[in-house]
Length: 399
Ligand SMILES: *Cc1c(COP(=O)(O)O)cnc(C)c1O
Image (tube, rainbow, N blue to C red; front, side, top):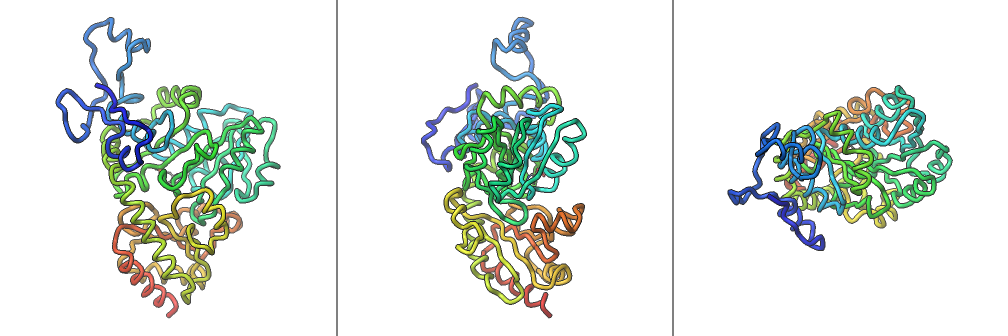
């Protein structure tokens, strides 16, 4: 059995259908689920060679499984990365990408506007083990430069950020990291692997929650870490093998098959989001609308430079704070109230009372998470049906 090898010059659509396929002797068309914990060996000598690494092959699903390997190879082909490692969740990927590189006495510098659990890992978890951390306004390049210390080992950012959809200049932050002898890890969930290529922009490592757009239908948790083979060998491989945040082969199969339709889904969802953003902009009841891809995005130049598509998400500041935002959410008939994103179903969340509830009002204000802010994840319904629903709910929120 060998991975199907394809010229990397092929388009993403093609790589996502064929990349990483590992066909068994049965010649199956669709990739198989190898739901097995382990593997058997023809002889004691073979098992010895497998464990010594002299013979390639699978050993135990905590660190290698054929279906998980197919998902990893397909993700690596899409990202243009030398190596990929799958994890049980997006947070397992983020944690591994950081913990795998760090030891007591090191310093992490990160953008303040982060997915809540990423902030927990950086602000609260790592310091328990003697790793210092500082948070800066990711949009402010001078703040990144000022934040560097002699012991800074890695920089971490998310762009566009959750839930404000602010961008960080990845190429500029990568240069700051390199100059300091530090690495840069980018959480690329909001941009998706289709619309932003952090490795090409100079990042050392990219992480995804595959739970979001990669699954795209709200079924499985998953995560993936992509980097050079040297980075994976030095920081990730042993950590994952010995600590065990492994992806289930079943989830890997669902996510692998979901990758085949990723471009179709993302392009449609982003086109619908652009249509909805244009349809809502300037409406009574909306204090502010942020959509990467509209010319009024505060960093429109950077969007054009750094991303090849907009986003499937829209941030809306509803006039009238929490009460109006709640009236708006409760009046929706089609769009569902949920904290998830990247789903085929349009989902909306009020970050201040859900994903960002545990922060103080001041910390939320620093992250741009106001009481009236809602985050809309646009799904695969017809864009006009979603827009009609949002407009009637907006009218109701003002009643
Ligand atoms: C969801 C998410 C995560 C965490 O992913 P899980 O799969 O839920 O663990 C990390 N970063 C961002 C930006 C996310 O949206």
